[in-house]
Length: 492
RNA sequence: GCUCCGGUGGUGUAGUCCGGCCAAUCAUUUCGGCCUUUCGAGCCGAAGACUCGGGUUCGAAUCCCGGCCGGAGCACCA
Image (cartoon, rainbow, N blue to C red; front, side, top):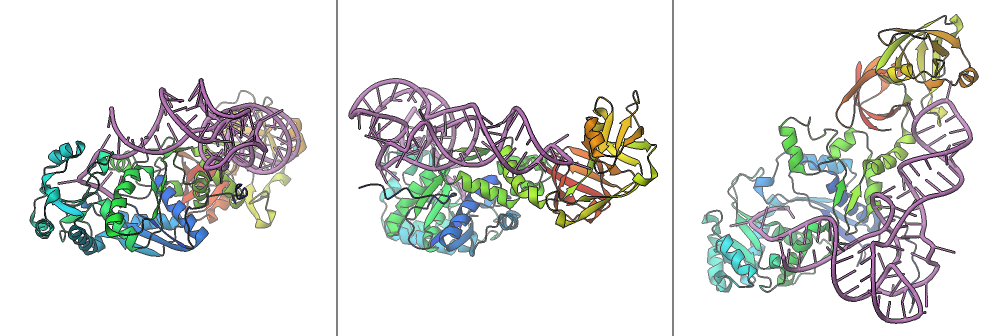
């Protein structure tokens, strides 16, 4: 009588309903541009469930609207998916499968469940809204077949193929939806070979069936589409997959829409699809956000129907837990001020060594040559304690003379050497870089503004893609290496 | 307007199906404190939620009705 025991949810995604053995799932993007974080939800959810239950993961590119197919997107989607660790077993492109859709369309006509409609769209809508069938609905199959076979000669807009549903369906949107229409537009892959294109609801349902998809995970904006597609399954006598609809993912401060991003790029407001202000996968990756952080995020949000608002703080928190252990530490000086330390005892000069990571000394050290000439960041110089004392980490304590000017090279005086002295003096403990061999570095911030400064010499061995922690500044990813290093800032 | 779907701390989640073990989980966030030669990490502590109103019931976050708020769809886009 009782609940079958509270099952301890192993933490993470909830179980998928109605699983019988292995599952077949698919991610089916429209190739309109690179993937954004909203796509990541669909991709990661599908990929995680396949990992859990075993089975097959399908990538299907849905390019049945030549007007919305971006030739570059086919490749960028694959790149983004690889970064997302979405390892698909099979890949299909719908524009390769046109003949299949034609075949099923014809079969549906023969079953008497589809008809060629030559009504004007506005006329049909009027009838439909009143639950009235249009005259074409009752045409004999032969007539429909004839019109179907001559469909290709029709002008765009003159005719469509409709699937019969229920003309009295309480949701007018469901009533006799369009399965095929004419589009006069070069297709990036098939050129002008075809003019008759399936509508998404038709090709999706046919493909999901043919490919043996067991569970369809899609956004709740497809709720009505799922309902429409069920009619097709019914007409053909196919088994209906399990439909799961998840809510919208809103990202604070980010315009998610691909079209907005595209406009912005074309107008030069963004530097490209990986501009740090965008919510694309590649922009996020460029900033040093790790795949694992997104995966954590998506599995935590799960497939529930209510909308979720994601904050950058949340992503940063997840990412930091990955980066904290992974990232080596370096000294970076933003807004540099050159400081000359007077009266420096000779034996304080030399190579100063510091762990690459304070919690993992076994990773080795970096070396900072110290000769009394350094760069410090302006903020530290300006706020150098009441007594004007600063401790340069692992080096010496210095004091600025009162009343020294805030411009150009600054003179400081050697004060003492030990940490205890610094503490006793209430000194700030700051990072520094040698004035001579440091490397010029620019950090591109999340708002695309650039902070320039110097990074310590040891950074010369960094490679593109490395993510490091710039001590007291934040985590950042190496975007370009060389004799001037460019970073993209991730977060504190 | 019509159709449908949601609503648990700032955010994200567990619990809702099968009412009691929920004076509500976990994470993050925020704020204290400790620690630390990073403004990072770690440790300790604290703050903070069942949208509202009725109803059913001994008992409601959980069931029913209504309101409010939010979202989606209403295309020859996907």
